[in-house]
Length: 422
Ligand code: AMP
Ligand code: GLY
Image 1 (cartoon, protein in one colour):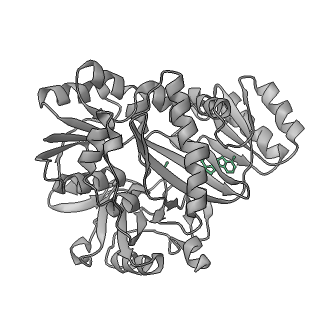
Image 2 (cartoon, helix red, strand yellow):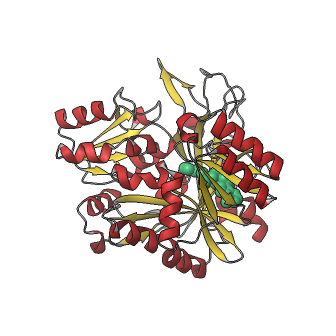
Image 3 (cartoon, protein in one colour):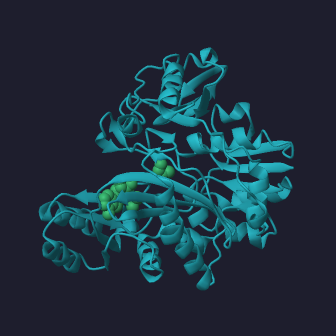
């Protein structure tokens, strides 16, 4: 069969690496792809927001299944457009994707169906938001309603910071229209875990859990990024917590949406805070995580195309997921200056010297003639495996040592929480 993957980051490279292993897949296209993906798939110069162009391409090329990476396409309604053209697509429809596309919608669904999440209020008027944060009188979290490329969440340590955040998001519209409405919520404390699940709207099949590292510097210091590394499995996430996450998070949200006539088909990502009272939802995403995918999908033994087709055809009850028991660790190599401004076009060397058991997933790379050069903030994700997390950390960093490009930065402490637990 012919598959089209939409997106061009490390997540999409990982999905393509896995899909390529299926005996059922003959040809993979990727739109727009990147320098590394170009070695595994045919790259098409269409961006993820060009859903009309993607539908035209899928029709013309008779694509059997389109797999969507980024939320922009999903929230823009690529699922509905493809369905209207009779094209098969893995990813939720626009209404279901609102779980990520609108924080207000997401929190309201959670409240209505009893999903564990931080207490919150929604505001359209900055004066009301201000008086509420004064009333709270302590730390809180301010979230712009709409998509803001992962930047629309401000953690305020006190009332003054919360008022500044209201000003920035609602009055200055720092994130544009996304700041028309805001969610103000209670600050949760604990360790974060990412739990993804395949669902066809009825059956829910959770993937192995993972933990991301959002800050740029070691020790979780500095500004937030798209994610500087991940590992799986996180030892904090016990089977008891997993049962709670299924019962108190995944099941109520999928059943709740279904009861409103919204069938969620695709992968759902629950960003959980493991609090003293159990797992609480920080956010839902309507897609695979990045870099979580780079550690979770390589652990999946089951043919990914079989799973995705079962999701699309609503027969996920026929599928069982099998997992590699080894741990996986992914270290992201980023451009100097990221997540601020950075230079591009730096020559990347050492990929041909990687140990054979280490994988390199490309994010911001491009081929300039014969040479691979940097083209984004996050450049590569280097994934290693081991009997436990400690060994996987060693293998991943053994790979990292081989790679070089000018200005390269990465965290030296990926999986530190797991290692501390011993
Ligand atoms: P979100 O996009 O809603 O996941 O927020 C991005 C990040 O902000 C999360 O991964 C958390 O690190 C942090 N965050 C969001 N909401 C809260 C909260 N209620 N309490 C503490 N941290 C939060
Ligand atoms: N790694 C966080 C995300 O994909 O949203």
